[in-house]
Image 1 (cartoon, one colour):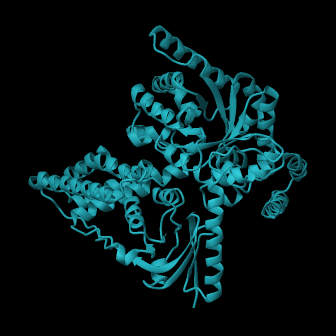
Image 2: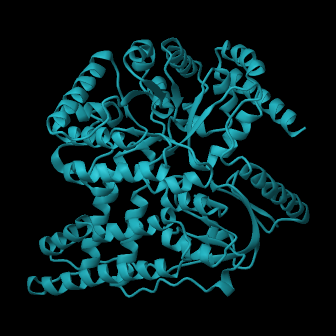
Image 3: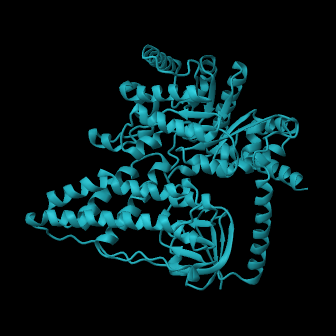
Length: 584
């Protein structure tokens, strides 16, 4: 009998194959007393486990194909860096000394403390970094307890669909090396490194499929639908025939989309649309260039600070931004200044005060930077300097009023004066823009537009602030809807403000990457999109098959409605109608 299991589709695609239930022994961690005289010995045992864990990752890295892109290997490098981080080392050693306990228990306590820090973060991407902590800790614990971490060879896994509790990036790369068809995990989220990695290497994958290991046995036939997040166990003949046909169509569709690489994004009535990508680090540019040799509309610089667990100096930032610029090969780079705050904190300031009651509303982004200008100025200097080497723009997040904007512009001018006095080369005419992600900023977009070179709409925060809800809170996130009339009015207001001031307005939130909204945004007058790399060609396909002269009046009628449900229904009908016309 067929069994349907739902999870979260994190890498679209269809896979059909036999199941392989991948189980790893995880010994229970217990506490025991370690006398003071034995502390040094216990610490040496822990250090040896750290070293062994690092050797294991290096061995996995060496086994992977030599032509594996650097951005994919970077996922293993992230875990290697974590093994060298004092956060693991010093914290665990302190626990051994303070509690006179064994290394396993000391590491377990340190792990819980770190996971708590990430759990309290509001940003969904950063919250999932706790997965990396848990993966690294499990590897160290296995080394401490001499638990083998063995992946079967290719003869057992080739063409199989892996069912596991969770997979580390290293596991995923090794399994791909064994030519698996896809994988399903019981745990994990859409923003975990493993999920992101599965997209990059093109393996159909589902996470969060609870109890999959209890419901599936090795050798059973499975179908993965990565688009719908659906797993079918023991499918009937009709389902197999249906999904084999879908897989064939998907292969043909990917080939068609691939033909759009480096083709301009132009509507059918000749309107050129700018299509950029979003990145978190310079290494992400390699993934972007797999789809298009375009520029970057959003570089989230806070990842550098978080991964360094501190405030990198000016030279470190300059070299990092220069690496990103040079990898783009003369394509534009839009650098967003750090969006750190009580919810996205770096290690050296975690214990300096209580966690904010409402981090999203607290001291974050530009508010944090202006409160601590001595930490912000090195970033301004680094951006101004790298802008002298190529097409760079600077974008300020979380602005709420023109007085705040003026303070930022004054600080930028002061930084320029310092660089002039020191005879350091920089871009005198660096373009400065603002993220419009607070309703107050959208309502004042015309005033911002008069003083800035460009605007960029950050819909992720704009929606949650407009609707007064936390988008990662399960109790209220059903209300999170980009098609709420109030949200659409604020977006329209910002686009119109840019047109009146003759400056570009882009949209870089998740809404830009969702093809459900591409025609809507085009009809609203948006001409600049900044999207996730893996959705770029799909968005371009819709743009190139859209006719603005037909879309604009239809979108105007849709926006006249005051009900989210009505707007969604009419937009769905429009999308279906336009898709049918394209297919025919």
